Image 1 (cartoon, each protein chain N blue to C red):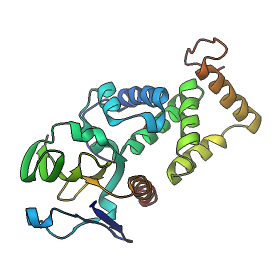
Image 2 (cartoon, rainbow over the protein chains, first blue to last red; image 1 turned 120 degrees about the vertical axis):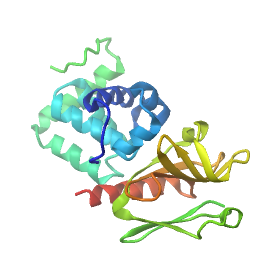
Image 3 (cartoon, each protein chain N blue to C red; image 1 turned 180 degrees about the vertical axis):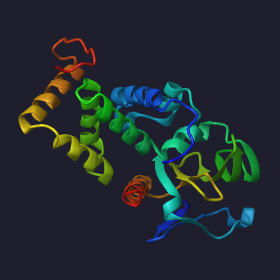
Image 4 (cartoon, rainbow over the protein chains, first blue to last red; image 1 turned 30 degrees about the vertical axis):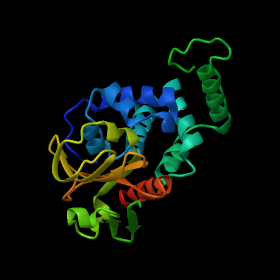
Length: 130
Length: 120
């Protein structure tokens, strides 16, 4: 957004990513993001414009810096479930992510992440996807 | 009655309902679409301190008028029972609008898609 930021953006985005991964987009309230980041509500809005702006920044940060982590795939899944059908920017980001890998890999990546997140098979979520 | 919001190719126009006579506010507030940074459904903002009232009312369960907090100027016109939509602005008289509308989800989606298109 080109605003002055008086905080470590990468650190803030990591904290926000954890909240979105735990609660999903709709389930994440501003209060949760305020508590997780320790920033004022007004500072978050000024820096990111909206809760969607916060999610998009978190999604981009993960795709750019932790492309193959479970965290990134979880955020992509949340985007697919909740936002791709309603927001053009999220749709474009997820499409770009999709086109970086062969389709079979995508399906495997999404499936593994989902199984891991569910805890169904008793796996340990170590944040790595290999 | 909830606020009316109209969006045309250049502007976002908020037509407050119910308080204009009480506060002698303008009949509508117009903001350039380019200055709109995003919209969020955020009911919990009504539980926070709204800051210092600069004209307006704070009768039980109804927040209307201008409030200033941490150097940010907000326009409120929302009932506690409404779904609060926060619209973040830049280069305008207000930093944010906190308003109740009839179709909050549709409005939020519409604004955020316009923001996405405008920022390209």
